[in-house]
Amino acid sequence: MKALVVYESFFGNTQKIAEAVGKGIQNYEVQVLNVKDFKNEMLEGVGLLIVGSATRAFRPCELTKAMLNALSKDSLKGIKVAAFDTRANVKKGPGILKVLAKLFGFAAEPINKSLIKNGGQSTINPNGFFVIESEGPLEDGELERATKWAQDIK
Image (cartoon, rainbow, N blue to C red):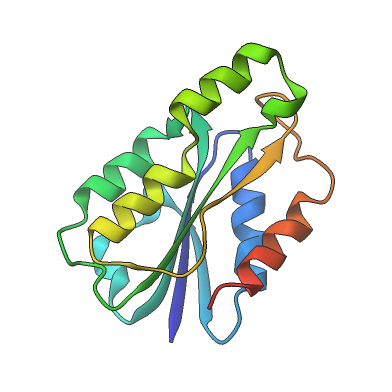
């Protein structure tokens, strides 16, 4: 069975997390690809779809939103799904970031909701991986945490 990890990355951090997630997936033939290369017909034979995006303005990036909007209702029926994002660690930023994050959230949650709305079966809670400031690099240990998160997908 196939697993597809689709990501959108601006500074390379989300791509690194997607690759670490791909390494952690077990019992699937894994393909990791940029969202700009995704086509709906790639879902044929996929048993697990994981979508990740950098968080921009507390939401998924534009190409990720377009990909999710292009999915038809029930197009993910029978497919296990999971979502992740990369984000600033609001605990280490100015207080206003904490307030905004509490109000608006991050990219992983709306990605996960969209995947489920299109028939996907959620397998694990959405997760966020921390970058230092807006461009990165990733905080220490995030690649390992991403691989472990993927190993926990059932």
